[in-house]
Length: 234
Image (cartoon, rainbow, N blue to C red; front, side):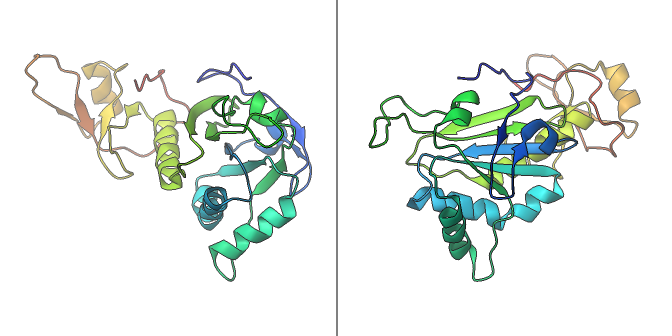
C-alpha cells in the first residue's frame, strides 16, 4: 500500500488503457490529474459514478485535469459501452479506463476497501476512492467512500477549484466555499504583507478572543503559478 502523504510525490506506473498505453508521469505532464477506483465496475453505483464523470468531462478538461479510472474488471470495452448508454444517447467516455484486475494500482495508491469486503475469490475489493495530483506530481487530496455510497463529483470539482486557487494565491477557502465567494487571507501573511498582496484591502472580523486571524478578501487575478507560502487548511 502506498505511504504517500499529502504533498508527497505520487508513484509512477505504466498500464494499458482504453486510450492506449499510459506512462502516468509523462501522461499528466503539465496537468492536474484525478485517479479514481470502484469496487466492481459492472454494478449499479459504479456505473452511475463513471457515467457522472463522463458527463462532466468538459468541466474537468476546462480545469486542466486528466482523468483516469482504475478498473478492477477485465472488461473495459463493455464497461465503456454501459457507461455511454447511461449518460445519454450521444454520450461518450473520453477519459482513460485502466485495467487493474490484479489490484496492483489500487494497492500502489492505497485505494483498498475494508479488509472484510472481498470478491468471490477472496481478494480485497478496491474502495470508492479518488486522489488529486498536481502538475508537480505531488498528492494534493485524497478521499475514500464505502461501496454502498456513490461519490459526488461536483464536490471533486469544487475541491479542485480550491486546490488550484490556493496553489496560485496566498488564500484559504472557508467551509461551504464555492468559486466567486470570498476567501480567507493566508495565515502565513502578516497584515502588512496582506496589504501588499491584496491592494484592494481585506475585511478583518472582530472576534471575542480579540485575535485578528479571520480576514476575508475577494480572490485577485493570478500573480504566480506557485503560492508564496505553504498553506495549512486544517
